[in-house]
Image (tube, rainbow, N blue to C red; front, side):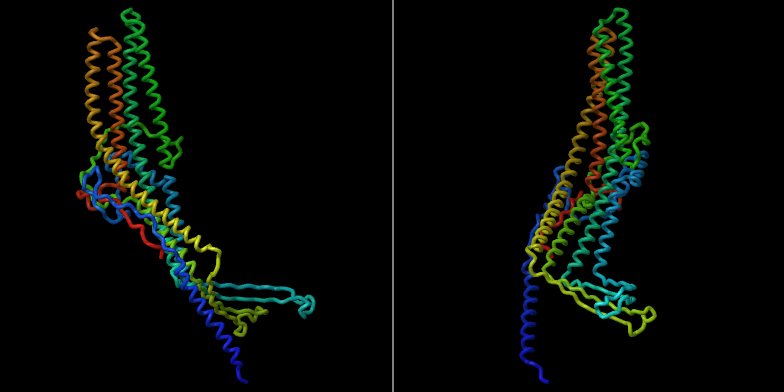
Length: 500
């Protein structure tokens, strides 16, 4: 019997256009993907205003060791507090948990590239329907045991891009953990130094209160003897009360800072107490030359950079939606209505298959997803640009702050010396009756205010020093020892290019 050639030609005629249509759709997928250029990152400046031209652009080095930078202050109590914060701070613990989640998602994305295997089995007993020719009440048991496998070939790189994006997310989370550690360390140090400055200021104010009280007792005796007027007595009482009020305000401020320090340490504020201590440590001097790699260790900049790269990878994933999805499947096992016959050779069953999915019309859903992914990529690039700009600003702020605070502290030292000399002279002249009590009180008030301002400036210098260390991403020292080269600029990566 000869085959019907008309039917053969008809079948061939259908298959050929379909193959051509499939190829056309595949090629159109490449043509439909849009090109996108995100906002570029800022260009690194050739120099910083505060350090002339001693800055050079270098590659990111956020993984470089920072060391225990807080030990440069030589304060044992501070060292203990930073260690306690590293163990119990809730922000660090939260960042560590998020890093663990990101790493787990990265492993999951990598696992999607590998073949998947599984085993299964089952037992079913059911009543057969009489209407299909079976006697009423007839029941049938079915037993099965099988193995299955599935694998999706990564023909267009979708799985690789997803794995790369998840890996970049994990790197970003790791950098954010480093950033959180550095932030907590610096906040502990700054809060601690503010507390120590307040202790010194409170001691100074208490000394002023005692001095005013001595003056008050002397003035009361002279008033009772009729040597001074009641106005003089009222002035001294006013100074005593005003200075006592300032002391109470400092006590309240210290309590608030102590509670804030307890939270940084991850401890209950009700159970935490930091005893008063002398604040006699010398302020560490920032070296004039710093290696070009230290500023690149800023973990927040590294996190923004890897986040931008992850968004770029996801934009590439969105573009692969125009390509077909292919999945290979296979299964094999045994099935029988008798448990004793389940694993007999005659009960075997198997199957292989290939699944192909190619969307043709989706109402613009894929294009919308791609536009969304590109917008997220652009947002991440803008965020990275902003982070780099803030890094430059932070360093400029702290360097200028240290320079100006040093000049201000020198001027304030001269003011304290002059105010102290004025108090000594006014006390002598008052005892000899050359000046009024009002002039003496003014001299003491001026000396107290200048001494308090000097303490506040010293605390501000410590704050700016810690702030500079944080702005540089850690210590100004490297594994090779003390820095002697020039400071380097923050990492600046290009954000241009299209999703692949």
